Image (cartoon, rainbow, N blue to C red):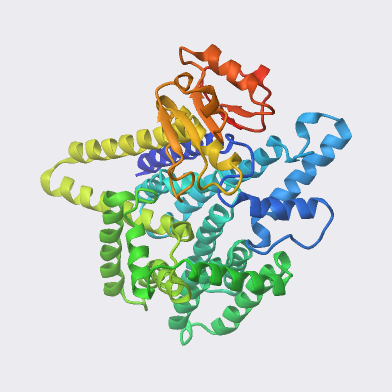
Length: 505
């Protein structure tokens, strides 16, 4: 038994180390504010670094950017003391790449810590092996990887949600004033990171109801927990008027883009479970079956049994959150459900290991069980590394696509873009450049007069006519040219990389 626990913990350490390395790698590319909604948080950090006590906007809550602000302020002070330019966090054009790296570095730490917190949550209800497999299933989730490399609050909210739930389960298991206040602290940290984090309080309150007639003063402890949660929220977000205003604006923004009703939104949320960006159909199905399995166990135990109460509270959070979310807004955004993945991952691991153990017991198939587990772990690991590599080291057409979206001035519709077929950008999302993206085998076959009318030219410097393209770059007055990871426009004499390049005329 002890040997099995030791092996499981070694696997846990390996998962944590590899996960941190992958997230740090992903966080270190494209060090500029242009990925996701990073610019929203960057504006708040900029305002605070300039000495303002009021954030620039209230789209995200204070705890989501205050730690990064503190780290950047520390780096700035060390830069002033030492004069070491590598530690500078600001430049004439805004933040330096080092500043963006520091912000995302913290995100990678949050992501890794959330995996460790998932393990502790799993150990409250499941065997060691289930907890470790659950950690792996969270670690390989595409959304989790993405959120761990972006300066946005989603991954920190996931971390605090799991931590808060560990404290909630402990409070329900052994009720006391200290444990209830600690659970209230967890709820407050969730709300101070993102407003939807406050919904973690619902299963906490629901789980306390059965204790009202059994534990003296538990209602006072619950009120105290609410007071602590409110105090923590106000500590990090004292500008309540701004919070209310931006929350209302957010809801109006969502409602203006909704395409379904409340029932349809709930079906969309259910479909998220099977999305390739979250679990995929196989792990999603296992999570559903695991949830059903645990529900049967919890109902049999009943809420009067501590373990049964904990299981019911654990299962209730994804359900409460989903229903309350679609009650408030019918625009379901997948990243708003990221904090449910530790719960669904643990349920999937619970079902997978339980089903394999049952099979091994009935068929004496211990070897088969280990082979299936090894195949599953190997497949998920290889898939994850490949996904990170593809994002961190994208091919030329992907680089060109990102640069066009980032640098092309408005309006983008109707722009004329000549692109070589070998590096033809795959334009996704809105109809940017619709109808104006023209592929050719080589741009040197196009008359110079036509090229002069283009808004952008996309080509590979490794092409046979690279001399032509170098001349083309030199002929464009004040070009914005990019090779590899774009941080700023490069003068033409610096362009000697054989990878894809883009000229914006």
